[in-house]
Length: 206
Image (tube, rainbow, N blue to C red; front, top):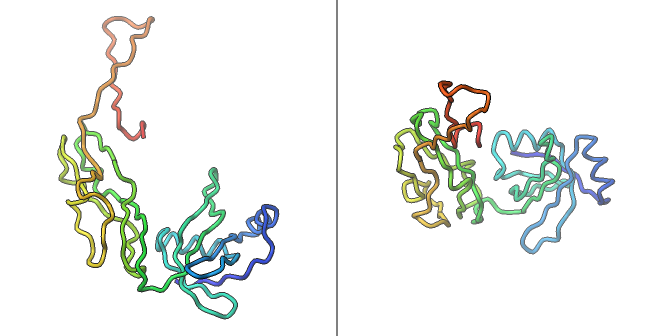
């Protein structure tokens, strides 16, 4: 995806805050044998890139009349509003091999037995591949996962050209029996009053 950016001569928190108030994201572009360069990018454009391609997206930057490819290396967000506050971009060639962390996406979580609790062990998987085949996420289907079992790296099929930099036996997600915790008795409640169990690992506890 191609986006335009402009050089940014002035730096500092005051300048960055002014840019953000104008819906412009300050960023830095660096790379092998490249002097880091401060640039500015439209928030609307970068939001579109991340929403469409994810945070490992390759961007075609148009900068000072020249085209260059870059990958998003780091996204800093406002902790309250979630806005993109700053970007680190790494200049690449599309066939260049990179080592990146790719998010895990669990599929069919609604099919998990009600008496089970999904325990996610890995949020991301570290891998190496050419820049142009970096997956947006690693899909892990838990539809057939039964209580007491797990899905590991070795159970996932990765695309050709992708090298996983994790232990084959590393557990991505497991399904445990949900623990039931009885609520403390209320001094004002009668002995015959029924109490609902609290499930550890339910959505409310994550």
